[in-house]
Every structure is written in C-alpha cells, then in structure tokens.
Image (cartoon, rainbow, N blue to C red; front, side, top):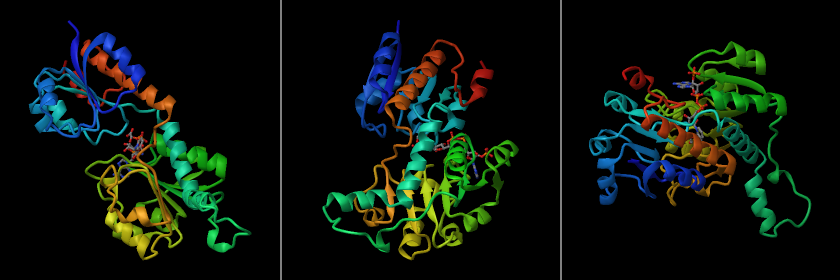
Length: 326
Ligand code: NAP
Ligand code: GLV
C-alpha cells in the first residue's frame, strides 16, 4: 500500500506528479495552521509532510501520530521544532546547496538594485517623467570597490563573497560564529566582531538562519553603529532584525537605504511603512525562486521524503540523531 503523504503549500508540479506515483498524496494550499478540518483528518494518517510554510510544533505533532518525516522545500528550517521532532524520532530534512548560487544572485541583485535605485528609476521612466538630463537627485552610489560586510558566512554568504570579490572587487568583512581561514584566503576576507563589521561596512548583508541566537540580532543599537551612508540588505528571515528599529533608522537617516527579501510578517502587511519608502527595495521572499532551482529543491525534498519513508537515510537529513537511534 502507498504511504500517506501531505503536500503543504509548495511543491513544483513535475515533482508532485512524480511523487504521486510513489505515495498516496493529499495536497493543501494556503494552509498556515491546523484550523482546517480536512487537513487535521489527513494529518492523523500521514507518515510524511512535504513542502511546508507551516510551523511544525508540538501542537501539530500531537495531531500527527504516524509521522515519520517532515521534508522542507527550503534550506532554512526555523519553522520546525527540531528538538521536538527528534524527541519523537521524526526525521526532518531541508534543501541545502542546490539553491546557494541562486540565492546569492538574488542578494546581489537586491544590493545592486538598492544602491543604483533601479526600481525607483524604472518607475520614473515608465511614468514618462524622463524629459532630459538627470541631476544628482537621481544618482545612486557605487558598489564596486566598496566594503561589503556579510553576517553569516555559510554556503550563501560565501557565494555572495565570491561574486563581490571576483565580480566587483569589493573589500569583504564577515561575521559568523566561527572564523574561516579558507574563505579569508579565497576572497581576501577579514573576520570582524559584529560591532566593527557594522561600523566599517558600506553594505551590511544579513544571511544567517533564524535561531534563538539570531532572533532580533540587528536592532536599534546595531543600526546606530552603521555608517549614515550604509545600505542594509536582509536575505535571512524577517525576525533576525527588529523591523520597527529598521523603520526608525531609515526615517532618521541613521542609514541610507535597505533592500529586503524577508519581513517580520509575510506576506508584508499593506500598512507597513517600509512600502512607502523610496529608499527601500522590496522582494516577496523570492531568493531561491527560479524555475530551475525551485524544481531542483522540490525534487530533492521528494527524494528526502521517499528515502525516509522507505527506511533509507534521507540525503539531507537535519536531525542525524533520529537516524542513529534507528
Ligand atoms: P549555512 O550554510 O548554515 O550558513 C549560515 C551561516 O550563519 C554560518 O556561517 C553560521 O556561522 C552563521 N550563523 C549562525 N548563527 C549565527 C550567529 N548567532 N551569529 C553569527 N553568525 C551565525 O546556511 P545557508 O545555506 O547559507 O543559509 C542561510 C540562511 O539564509 C537560511 O537559514 C535561511 O534563513 C536564509 N535563506 C533565505 C532565502 C531567501 O529566499 N531569502 C533563501 C535561502 C536561505 P558558522 O559558519 O560559524 O556556523
Ligand atoms: C528560503 O527562504 C529558504 O530558506 O530556502
């Protein structure tokens, strides 16, 4: 008999079609909690959940007594209570590596768009306002040869450093939990404590996971340490910063601009003041979303799911302990 599986919110069609050949699949879209009765009914029987955009916490797990694996279609897994999953011997998987270059491209695009005011000027042209030579009020700032401070020098941070160093001849400062000799040599990067990185960077780019330690790590104090000309880019999660403090820092010209792919509440609320700031460039949490990469992520997530359901070790298992306990 095919194993019962829930697809929650996201899985590319091609991967879904393939998954249906191997599992008894129930799909739920736009589901963010366990309020949906049909979803709760299916949860009782499900051995696997794939996709997500859903918090997997004690409350959900109590409704899913047969669950063996949760397969996130994302590298970040702050939506998963990994400790609780591990306690219950439920495997958790994510999709690292295959999205690294795509996310780095998006982050660099966001940085360039913010520095050179691309969305704002695009709008200006399309509104038929371009009538003659432009003066300084339309200028952006250079990216090349400036100093980029990367907070979170992991897979994506390093791919950003690669672009910054080789493509834009930027000086690279970084901050992470550990110092990285190889990265320093490859990209001529310098390790800084957080305070010094903030004070010395022209661009501050945040790309850490959301954890207990990183929640709210960039707030009023951190924005006040940045240069008045600094441009802040957030690609990690909305909750790694204190969004109201970013708004204040932008309003009081403590920093110059921001490029944001992630927000405290997603989708962003219509009354969020960030939406009315011309010096803020926004994206709808789309770092990894190219056709190629979304499909690759969906396929890897299916591979993880099916491996787990069939008693094999999923290729990108998060909680190794569950496997060791088998
Ligand atoms: P990764 O390889 O695990 O890298 C994470 C980096 O963050 C590591 O360098 C780690 O330091 C550092 N870090 C962790 N906790 C820290 C702390 N308390 N202080 C300072 N640095 C800390 O992960 P990745 O694949 O690069 O992905 C990073 C994150 O990007 C994901 O978790 C996700 O939240 C976000 N992301 C967003 C999008 C998007 O669409 N916007 C797409 C993909 C990923 P050490 O190396 O010293 O351990
Ligand atoms: C996207 O945000 C991811 O973590 O993959």
